[in-house]
Length: 443
Image 1 (cartoon, rainbow, N blue to C red):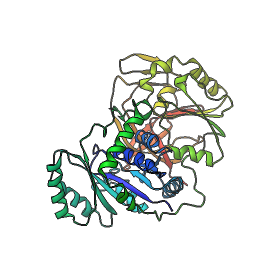
Image 2 (tube, one colour):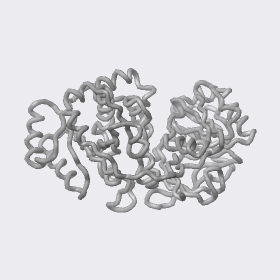
Image 3 (cartoon, rainbow, N blue to C red):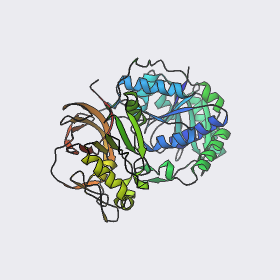
Image 4 (tube, rainbow, N blue to C red):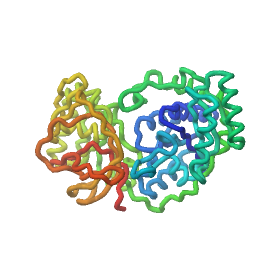
C-alpha cells in the first residue's frame, strides 16, 4: 500500500515548492516512483510537480471538495506511486476564513483526514534560536497533528546551524531533524503576478529541478524522511460521482500556456462519466474538434497572449462555428475573458476576442480578486439544474469594464457564506465566469 507525506511550512514563501520539486526528483533518481499532490486551489505549483515527478499532480482541497471526492483522489494517488508527496498551502494551519479563529481547509485538516505525517519546513531567514519556539508552537498547536519531522531552510552557515540545532534539540528533543538546506541559487524559481512563472515557460526547468535535487540529496536525510511516510486509512468510495457533470458527450478542451488551469480531477471525472475528451491549442491557432458537442476553455494567462489570441482566426472562428452549431461552450476565468468581446492587455491595447459573451475585460486596470467561492446555478445547464451548488475559487487581476445583456451564470458567496451577488454571463449555450469550479455539493 502506498505511503504518504505532507510538506508544510509556517508561512508562504518558506520554500515548500522548490523543496518538494527537488525531493520528487531525488526520489526518482533513487529508482522510486513518487506520486504528488498540492493542497488547495493551485494550478501552477501542480504543473511543476508534474515536471519533477513525471506524472500528473493531483489537487486536494478540504474546503471545496466533498469527502468522497477527496477519498477518490487519495486512492488515485496511492495507485499512481509510492511514496505520495503532498505540498501544503500557505502556513500549516491556514485555510478558508469562515469565522474568527475557524479556517477549515488547511494543510493540517488534510493531514487529519488522510493520516499522512507532516514534515515542517522552517525558513530560518532572519532568525536562529527563535526557530525553536516556532517549531514547539507548531508541534503543540493542534492535538493529534501527525508532525513527524522538521527540515530547516536558508541556513546561513555552520554557526547559524549550531545555534538552531541546540535550541531545537532542547525544546523538541523527540522531533526528528531531517536536514538543513543552505542559501543556494538552485533553490529558487522565477515569479510573476499569479505566483510562479508556469512550468512550461520556465527557462531550463529540467536543469533547475536537477540542481535542487542534488542540493536536497546532499543536505537532507532522504532515507529517514521516506521512512516516516504512512498509508492513508481514508477509504475510496465504491462509485464516486464526478466533481462536475460532463458538458457534453465529446468535449474539446483548450490546452496550452494560455489555457493551462484545468484540474485533473475534473477531466478524470468527465472521462469516468463516459465523455470523450480532445485537446486543442488556441495559441497554435487550432479550432476545437468539429465533432465536439461541448467546448471547455479553462483559465490561464490569455492576458499575456492577447495579441496572438485576437489574431488566431481559426481558433476564434472555430468557437463561433461551435456556438452556431449548438455546442455548449464554457469558460472559466481566462476562458471567460476570451469568450467576451474584447480584452485590454497590460499596456492598454484592446484585442477583439470571440464575441460570444457581452463582456469587456481589462488587465491594464488591475484589481486583485482572490478567495474561495460558493456558486449556485441561476438556470439549468449541463452543469446541473437551477440551484445546483458548487464550491470553487477566484484568483485574477482582471477588471470587467463593460457587461451587456445576458443572464448571470451563478449566484455566488464567499467561504463564510457572505453574499457577493451574481457572477458570469450566459447567452444561449455559451457561458462563463471568473470562478474556477472544484466540486459540486449536491451529490
